[in-house]
Length: 84
Image (cartoon, rainbow, N blue to C red):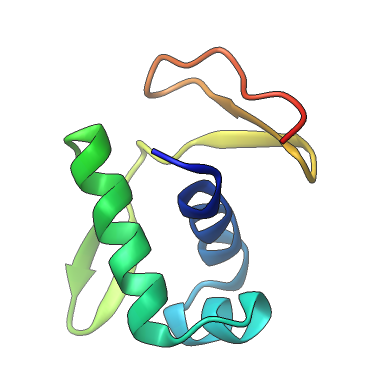
């Protein structure tokens, strides 16, 4: 798991689509998908359900962005990642 993957997850949850995430982050749509798949593989869990080409978040990616650079992951056991 790395910071870029977490940023993709946060942005994807905020924007609701891989295309909007890609535009926001200056990445390709395939790059966003790849980073998300790597994050899911690293965590050994699905963070989204794929439904007719759309990503629907599962309850697992529940995190609270306390600040734009702080992430608290309650559902996967990490207490916090502070100050990227």
